Image (cartoon, rainbow, N blue to C red):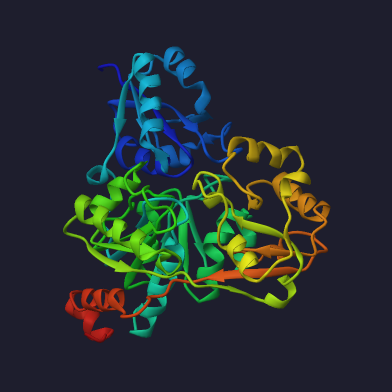
Length: 453
């Protein structure tokens, strides 16, 4: 038998596992000697279990810290390093490539042709050029529109398997009890809870071939709700990609955000209601240069407070969506904007009351402004969020995380929630595009679920 090629997959508990399942799991010519972990705290030190890795890996595969890359390459005689996570500046991807090359290994990116699944049902995919553009609100808008036309949509969410990988191979969420049973983190609840609130079933997990097969059993149309700025795991029949009008100039600076922009059928200029006409014109020009075949439409993200009167003249602590603040690169988000718009007396800086665990987050992401990122991957992080809020001296918490924070944390301060949903400003151009797409579906689907032209 020839010697197997020895591979390390650089990941963050998502794309890395999917690429392994699609490309390497059954390949006897390759041995994946390790995954590495980045971006998400506390996911290293585990093993990709045999039940998922397959018979070629009777002991599973170790998951190690990315900082150990050179050590792994030398000690395991690695031939190839495969990059498999998202939302890194192009330069940082190439720094990782340089580390791999200097250690004597090849550096590889796997593309859509090898890693996209063909689903047994039509797929509308939603991606973005950066984390925090508003993918999930857009998917929720799509689900409502599809249901209004008689379709049965099910959401497939980009993976977030932060716990027991074997138990999370295929996950189905239809209720809050399902999230409790799965011991979902804040980050998972942020993504699943709003979908469940409007009656949409969500599938996620690790093994997306099995996940897709299961989801298609109860849906006539699948909605891919992407993670970060990754390209879809499923081959889309209609691919919508968001660019952020509040972060102009970043459309082609991050991997694989530039890839999805170039792949898009439709590009949505998200948060256009808070951007200047000059910014929107510049974004249009960028899209036309990079992907002239794509249709460009406007998308709005109107923000509302559950109780503006409580915020007026109050000392406010703002809690924002965690990933958007961390690797999404935003200094603040919808919560801060809502608090300022409601005439808060003072925005309290949570760094003054944050315990060491959260101080490490602020040190790692120094761009974060005077807001509290809702990082909650582990119980000790939840405890740190509680401690920060209670010690802040605020009058009220303005929470812009999509999850019901008050139900998860033991805090005495009142919580005012910020909500933001996708909307079309002016003429419903995207609605027309989606409706026309529905008319192209197989006759059996169109006859069972008539839609407007």
